Each structure stands twice: as C-alpha cells, then as structure tokens.
Length: 372
Ligand SMILES: *Cc1c(COP(=O)(O)O)cnc(C)c1O
Image (spheres, rainbow, N blue to C red):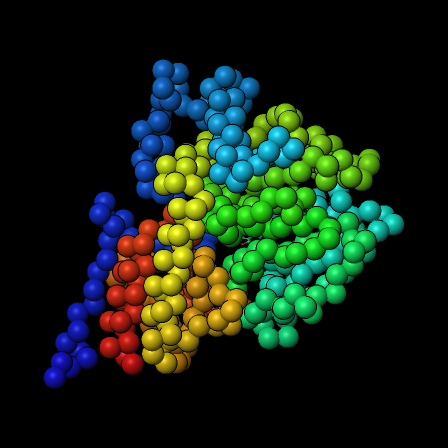
C-alpha cells in the first residue's frame, strides 16, 4: 500500500515553461499574443520605433483601432447600428457612466443583484436617481441566479442592468434575460466567451483584463437608438456620444493594441462558436472532478455555475490554504478564492488552455489522495 508521504508533489508547466495561471484578473493572455508583442518591441514593422511612442492619430495606430473594432463587430455579429468604444476607468466607471447617461430624471432603471459587482453598479445608479432592485440572490450569499419568474420588472424602466458572470461568486446567467426594455450588461468576466443575442441589448461593457486583453481599456458597445436616448447635457468625457465614431482624446494605445491581437487570436480559433465549445469542455472537466467525491464542494448552485470562474471549497480552511500553497509550488497559480466566498477559485477564461484545466484536475486528484 502506498503511504501518503510517498506521493511526490507533481510539477506542471506549459510547453514553453510557463506556469498555469488561474488568476481572476488581470488574467492569463494567449501566449502567441505575448510573443507577437515581444517581437514588435522596440520596433514595430518599419516604423523604427514602437507603437507606444507615436501619435494615436498616426495611420499605424488608426489601423490597429479600426481592426480591433472590425473584429469585435465580426465576432459578435454587430451591425452598423452599433458603436464600439474603447474607454478608460474600468468597468467601475461604467457603473456611474451608464446611469449618468441613461437613467432619466423622471424615470427609473431595473437592476438584477447577483453579486458584489452588481451591487456596486446599483449603488452608483441609486446615487444618481431612481434605481430599483428587480431581483437579488443576496439571501444565499449570491450562490444562485434568481429565477426569472420571481423578477419584478418595470416595463417602463429605461433599461435592465445585469452582470452576466459573477466573477467572485462563480455564478453565471445560463441564458440571457428576457425583458421588454433594453438590457445593459456588465460582461467583464465572460465577454466573448460564448454567443449572445445583440438585439436584446442597448449597451454592453467589459473591462478588458479578464477575457479580452490587459488592464487599461474598457470595451463599450452601444446600439445607436439607445445612445440617442441619453440625458443631456452631460460632462464631455462622460458623454458616450463624445466617443462614438471618433477618437476624442488619447486612448489607452498599448491596451487596445494587445486587445486587437487577442481578437485576431480568437477569430483564428473559429470565433465565438469555437471558444464556446472549448469553454464548455473546460468547465465540464473541472465540475466533474469537483462532483466526483465529497472532498471538493462547489459553492455555486449547480444550475447557476459559471464557466469562467469555478469556485469550490475543501473540508477545512487549513486544507484550503495548503492547497493554494502546494498548487503554487506545482505550477498552478492564482487559485485563492475571493475573501467574501473563501476557498478556491479557478478562473478559466478564454485564454486559459484546456491543458491548464487538465493539470488542475490532476493536481486535485493528487491532493485528495494525499490529504483526503
Ligand atoms: C473585475 C470586474 C469589475 C471591475 O472592473 P474594473 O475594471 O476593475 O473596474 C466589474 N465587474 C465585473 C463583473 C468584474 O469581473
């Protein structure tokens, strides 16, 4: 019989010798993208300098900006009625900018409260006007998505705001909400991870650092008829209209430059249908391992499980700390859960390869064998 002590701690590395990174954000980027960036520093094409050191109105940068926007349109199937914006301030500024533009003085907006980010968005909206809670899952520590039959939607609301994936709690809307009013979505942690129905939305925003690039840029998609409804007057920089269709001021050029490469990488894989299938496989592999024994316990209710952030617990907090430490030694980093949930969280965004999930599952087998 093998003694637990005799088990060797495994070591995992990517083919190029990198560790497997499960960070919630900023998060892993596709390796070909990083290599291309390296290749293009310090000299981009025949410029004699890098893309970071020239005007954002140069033809070279204009090409990158146009390419990134065209790729987003193509990947999501967005028609001409959509504006694509690259803004700064993170998703957190969108919590304020959305109601500033779209919550009318004499109207209201509905919010689905499914986690800490949704709460923050609601708080900013309430600060500006009449925001209503249409449903909340706070009663069970945000471990589920409230059933649509329980939502109290106002058909006169200016919009319905929701957080498609709850990064901290590991839950995700399994289907897009149905509402009579335009949807506004914080898609920061599952943007471009699966297909969506653009027609339902007025606005979609996503901080890039989870699923589409580095920190420093926020992708904002706005449908033109929704944009036209915005409040007036507005401070120039916070008016979406200022940024629709033109570069008003210096954009975060390095971040957009990398986003463009990530989008090309995604298109090369086969776009959203392809990445959706890969993400389904990765999540199935990991949840199947969690469910196989009682040693690991998923924290999200099975019907609400996220395919991006997989949250789980071990029998004791001591074992959880040990898991994080030993996993790091084994080459699996970023697994510590958010403090409000505790336990472990494996973020398996688009750029996280299936090999990373296989390595994690293998490590989970090892760890249970040793300590279970
Ligand atoms: C990370 C995250 C945010 C915050 O993004 P910042 O860019 O740091 O402001 C907001 N919403 C969701 C769903 C997130 O995952």
